[in-house]
Image (cartoon, rainbow, N blue to C red; front, top):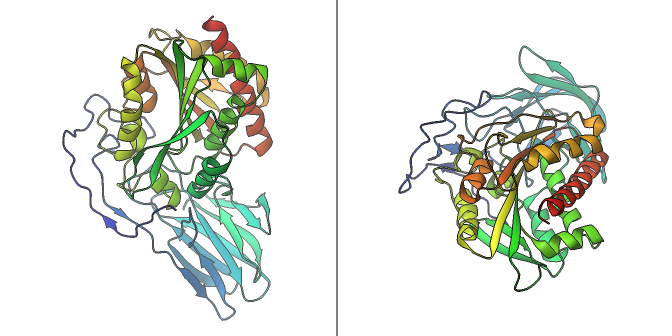
Length: 412
């Protein structure tokens, strides 16, 4: 069972901690993003709120819930306020709550954000079905969004992304029941709130032979659901029982960390962990237990004479489909693999309009730590926020297949 804390978190200064001095953040980062020692986080109150003569109710009492306040604007107009875990913060304005009423009625609902602006198209779930709203009115002056919704005594969930299959409890169910025998589950470490950072090790390699390895990371940023789903499909394709996947597993170990930020996922955070830190800026100083867990689990591979790490992927989401590779001028193992893989992914998914933007290795992000630790090529794999389930299935499956084929070819 996951662990939850409702408190004002005052960060402790850890030994041997410092902030990155040579990199201050990307253009979209808020000020101070590379100071990963921690910042005060005020967790939301978990509650049911009912207002009006004919009561309209909302509740954030759910895993991944995020709702700060609720008020009535007029007889049939209501406003939900959503605040982040702390600020300044990236504009990943996550929300998730339930809504219902004593009588069936149609209301106007406004989503208003503190320290952010509307980003995600609302997903409505009820009675096992989910749909995206198409009639959302965005107010560019306030950053709010307003839409009509019919409510009744039957509870509906309104969320930035569809929740089933993405929660920490879903991950725990998956690793308890759905993995083949050649996958070992370990706890690499624990989060600030004591939740496990799980490591999945896939090993069907030939005994007593040198091994190669790839690394998979996901869910450093809780709202980035489409990236997480792409990771899930990618990983599952590598576990398949066909000739390609079996041949790949005979040669390659896979080390996967599906959910690096369990506290943020559980508490519906916009981006940060329980200490108010962007984990993907903590791969130099390792001030946070989640990044330290991955570092400590993987670093021994660098000195293992029988294992050669050749590639690392970190799955994320943004407002487009995008590869962030290491600059092609930087020598890697396998050299410029991403530059050779990208056209294959693009060709298999022409409607997604993928593009690639190379970066140097100065920033304290996971991709660069993997390169600096193992000399391997590495990639930040960004997926559009609003991809459909069918698009994600096609992308994850085709990307895994072209990856395995190309990697097997390059390591003959």
